Image 1 (cartoon, one colour):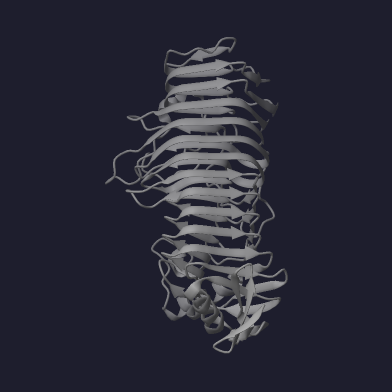
Image 2 (image 1 turned 135 degrees about the horizontal axis):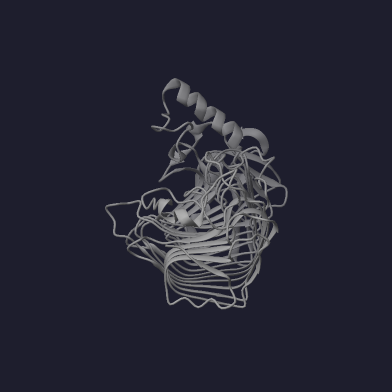
Length: 490
């Protein structure tokens, strides 16, 4: 049914009015600036709710603001093309292309593309650095994330749906959802390798979230949960059937970790060519990290399987807690070389010499990590660790720094004295039906425990082709590790 309102064509589809942006003056030639036209369509749709349709074509735009009860729909050959000029972007919390702030029932749908043109936009921002309008942060070498636009930023929204679209070429984080509730993401494709800090999805203190069947290829963390608000947290989040490549970590909790992370599952996902960890669970700003389950993950060519860390970077906050972590059914292949070689924005070079890093559980010396279960985990290492490259024998455990105040990364401690698993300051660690294997001999033992209580292993298979013991321990209490050749370190 075709009707007229204020001279603008409206199509009624299943009871929803559809507003074609061309009827508001938008031109899809890739060069005409359409910010005002697209915003006019959104504002009209927002009066009673409706669909804003982006038809086939390339529609150049700066910042647009979504309204409650509005669905932004991109047809198959439609492209929302972000401006390459920073002056065309507005700042809500960060600069962004698509903004939604304190709205309800908002959607981005369709099979079209949102292209941030991040590389070209970054060049414009670097020009602003030359003119003095934008400053490089102290000790930094590139413009801050606060000065580089994201593609999507939604703050304090309820009832968010993002599905089908391809989001690419951001100048910063690709999409951020801050303290949103009832958020669903389905079949979203992220392809963003145009500049630094290109996190694929960032969830900040969000609740009741489902991320399903998404593809992420990002030059930073793939899917990242953060907690900026000490009075809030990420809670009730399910991530499933996603495919991730990252020049940082595939799935990361932190680094910002003030409030907490609770009741979160990651299931049935694939990871490839990832520089850092498949799974990084980090509390360094006071967060409570509790009841986390990660399972059924296949990872090929990744720098590290898992890194669980409790630190104390924010000294004005109390030390957080990390407890009740369940990792199961992981199959991870760690290569001998950097796994993201060949990407334009690969992970940073590691300054200190090191052999291949083990997975690690690293607590705080006064607050151990509690209750970690590792079940049916297979990690394949290249081996070949040599003291001629870096030497950290188990007799020198006391020399491994604590670094409670440091930025957390799996390689932050330098060379570790285990090739498979290193655990420090933890209690209640249960390992069952797991296997760690190496292709070449390594000078280190497979597993090292330092200040660990109530460690239990059953059905643990170690492919240990070196002469060292399988397990080395210092300050261990109530340890049950039958059939593992053990060395006690004083």
